[in-house]
Amino acid sequence: MTTAFLPGSFDPPTNGHVDVLRRAMKVFDRVVIGVVDNPNKSGLFSVAERVALLAAIAKDGADVVSFNGLVVRAAEKVGADVMVKGVRDTTDVAYETQFALMNRHLTGIETVLLPADPASSFVSSSLVKEIWKLGSDVSSLVPEQVLAALEGKEPS
Image 1: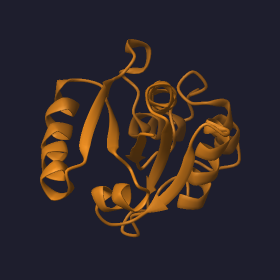
Image 2 (image 1 turned 30 degrees about the vertical axis):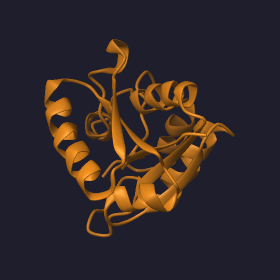
Image 3 (image 1 turned 135 degrees about the horizontal axis):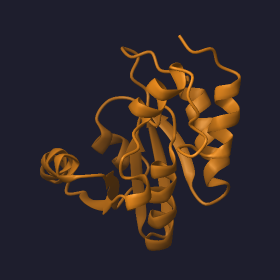
């Protein structure tokens, strides 16, 4: 049984995240989503909110945990055989390759890079937050659970 660890901040989860998650669930026996808890950053959604949103999005198809510290140590903790990262463009590939090589050096865990679906390759959590904060519609960029959660937030 192969366990994949899909780490990220997911603030907020986007349709691009969902695409990578669904594709990873087709390839690996078990997928664990890891939501990074960085106390030095204040997000739009709390860690607990992001975990709950991802659990609702994944339904029973993936486990969701939060972690802090090195991603590769969190992957080890959940018994991951591989890490999965979505990449949108060559910049993402270069960035993620450096981390993949370091993580393999530290622990032997391999990283699989999944190219983004072209329909969501331009979407990032940062852009979604900016568009939403400026009062524009993000319904085509995020899952319905995230859209509902955004309705309860005040743009700052």
